Image (cartoon, rainbow, N blue to C red; front, side, top):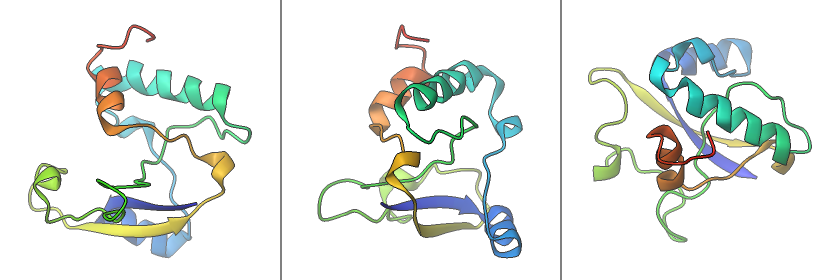
Length: 118
């Protein structure tokens, strides 16, 4: 499966140096940690090859069938991370068995605590 991830310059340099990226749960904002624990549980339940760590977020489709690649200039991306930090859009291929697809708005229901499965 082809995915796109948006990473800071710091993460991009780490990827170049180490050849791999791992999500760091220590960087998750404290109030969002229950939602991330829920996502990790879903990964364990639903994925054949779950690594069961914090997810590394990627985009499968940005907005529609024609716009698969995220556009960092789009209105939807204006609030992506703190201002003044350089971000990289990275295309990568990953085994389907390691991917749990979700909808952007559904994940935000979990983040906001509107989903009662947490």
